[in-house]
Length: 481
Image (cartoon, rainbow, N blue to C red):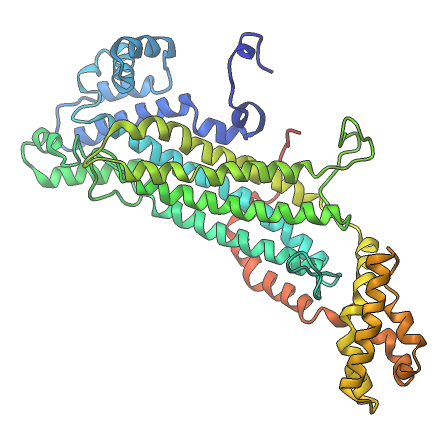
C-alpha cells in the first residue's frame, strides 16, 4: 500500500495496480542501474584479458559494489551534469576509487543504455512466454473437455451452422500459438549491441588497442558471451537499429489483437449466457444492479489490449525519424513505450490465465439456443430424407420455405418459440419421414468433424508446442480485481 506522500503523485496503474513483480522489476531503475554496473564490470574484465592495464583489485572492487547504488547521490549528480550515464559513472567511481580511472573505458553512453535495453527485452520475453504457455495449456484443457459439446457457430454473429465449444476454443488457441512462435522468434533474433563507440565505428576501442582490429573484434565477442547473447549486431549507428524495437513491439501488439478477439468472443457468449468468466463468491457486478455479472476480466483484457496495439505506433514513428547515426528524440519515447508494452502484455496474460482457468459453460442454455435455431438448419437434411422416400426436391423445398417463413414470423413478430418442427409434423406431406425427425435433428449430426479436429489439433500441434514450458505449468496468478 502506498504511503500518503505517494498519493500526491501520479502512479502508472500498469505498475501500481496490475503488473507482476517480475515484470515490474525487469524495467525498474534498480535492475537498470545494476545492469549498467555489470556491463562496466564485463568491459573491464574483457579489456584486462586483452591486455589493457586493469588490475584484479580494480575489478574486485567494482564487483563488491555492483548492487550498492547510492540513488540519492546519482540523482544529485544527474541534476548537476544533466547526463544520466555520467551521473552513474561518478556515483560508481565514488564507491570504487581504485577502479575509477577505468570505469566506462572507451565506451559511449549507448554501451550501457542500449545493451541494457536489449537485456530487458530478452528477459521480458522470457517472462511473457511461460505465461502465454500457461494460458494455452488452460485453454487446451477446456477445448478437450468440451470437444464434443455442440453449440451454435456464428458468422456475422448470425448462427448458420453448429460447431462445438471445444472447436471454438481451438480457434483462440491457434491465434495464441502463432503468438508463441512470434515471441520466441523476436527474442531469439535479438542480438547484443556490444561495443561500437560513438558512431558505431569502434574507433575509440581501436585506439585503446593501438590499431589491433582482432582485439576489438574479440572484445565485442567476449562481451556478447558475458551478457548471454549468441551474436552481436555487426553494424550499428550510435544506437542499435530502432527497427529492433518495431520487431519486438509488433509481436506484442499482435498478441494484443489475439487477446482482444478472444475476450470479445467471451463477452459475446456471456451476453448469451452460454459461457462466463469466473465470478467470485462475494464479487459485485454493479453498484446499482445486484443481479449483474459483468465480464470485467475480459473487459480489462480488451481495454489493455487496445493500449498495447496503440503503442505500436511509437517505434514505427521513432525509427522513421532517426537522422543518420542517431538523434536523441528516441530516448524519452522509448523510456515509456518499451516498458509499457511488456508491462501491458504481462497484465493481459495474467488476467487471461485467470479467465481460462475458470471458464463456466452452461450446456442447458446452449441446448436451448440450439433448439431455437436447429429446425431451420435441418431443412436441407429433411429435404434429402423426403427425396430418399420418393418425394420431389423442388416441391419439398417450397413446402419448407413456406413453413419456415411462418415459423420465423412467430419468432420475430410474436416473440414465440421456433415451431417449424411442429408445423412439419402436422403437415401430411412429411408423413413418410416423421419417424426420422429425431435423428435428423440430433445436434451431434450437425457438428461435422469438429471433435476429431479438436483432438488432432491438441495432440499434434498444441501439446508439442507446450513441451519446453512444462516446468512452469503449475504456477498460479494472483489477480488484482
